[in-house]
Length: 223
Image (cartoon, rainbow, N blue to C red; front, side, top):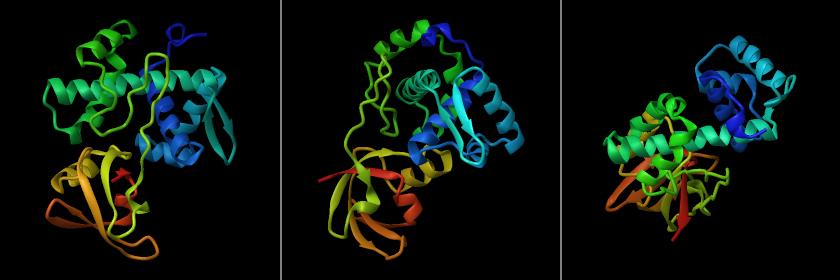
């Protein structure tokens, strides 16, 4: 069964993409985490997961969470590919601010027909990443991850070039943009508080204090 031969609704695509992201992040997609990410009630998540499981797209273990089957993973990656190309279209061609691109692409991705994905990619000059630095899956479903690590791994005095922002939420991206924290920018860790406390970084000649949670979603390449 190929991706092209499998048809799912926009709602199902959203769930598969969300499950993929959570599985990649914490190993499994729990009901409450899915509900929070998709901004729906837990009961709705349960019903949809059952439907996806009947279609052979996910495996759900009570009290543990859901994981994608191979069939479900292929579909999720296909949605992710369309999503990140849509983000590039919105920012590179239409000039939308990068902080708004993720939310807008969540709606646009479902309207991109399979037969125009490759022409779109060609028109965008085959981007390797989305505006936030996350990789665009290949047509074959491959994901080429650039080697990077969370900013919180760096010690005071160490520098890194921002590779990607792993949490693509509008308010978070807006905040980081105001600080000049974007892919390609070099930062230096000046100070780290113990026990997952704040991190002080230097961007250019300006120092900024970040909460540990915020710093942890910024991935860098060590300089």
